[in-house]
Image 1 (tube, rainbow, N blue to C red):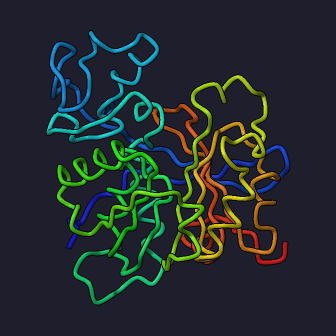
Image 2 (cartoon, helix red, strand yellow):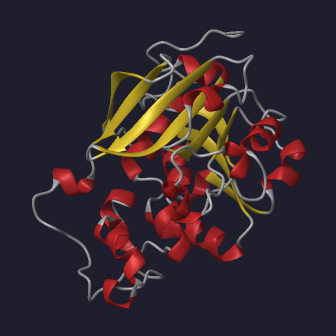
Length: 282
């Protein structure tokens, strides 16, 4: 059973340009909560992660934020170059997992907030979200097309002591979706690297491989409870249009006051931890 954990994400109202109500999620990170640095210094390294001195300059800023991504970074976390800019900050990942865990919550559990549900992490990468889902939900199906990255996710889950609750699957989520059964699907498809930040408005049709609509439609073969983690410069109306007949709630995810991304909740999960969810058929 997972340890009872303190929620590090808080919600506050924010009104978008389109006047839809969305939620601002503020995460308190490791760098805020600790006055002294801990773990490996630049000349040291976690297993599988290059020391700061050997990292490309464009990745150095991610090294400085390493404990925001994995609070247990210095205990053997493995991460590759793509993982540095793809992994979800831990405070946001935990908030998402706790919110999802409210679906079909087993109140007989001694662990408050522990949900007896199965979550598909369709693009697990090095495991940031997968780990938090495993801490708060009964079973996780973690999928990735890259064998090396999937091995890193397994290693990192072992560091956090939750690997026994995760089924690691090497494959293409789009191809696997018709064969999967789960309560919730979490989508964090590739954004195309940091280049997405250059666009004033991110076009969901410009996602690499497939469009946002294609990914959401595929996820709904499994469940209408779909959560998408997408670039911060997406338009709220475009996000809501991905599943117009379903309840929808949009969160703006901030860390240390900086807008990192948006999370979009569809289906029943849109009604948990939400301020003003859109009713079905809006």
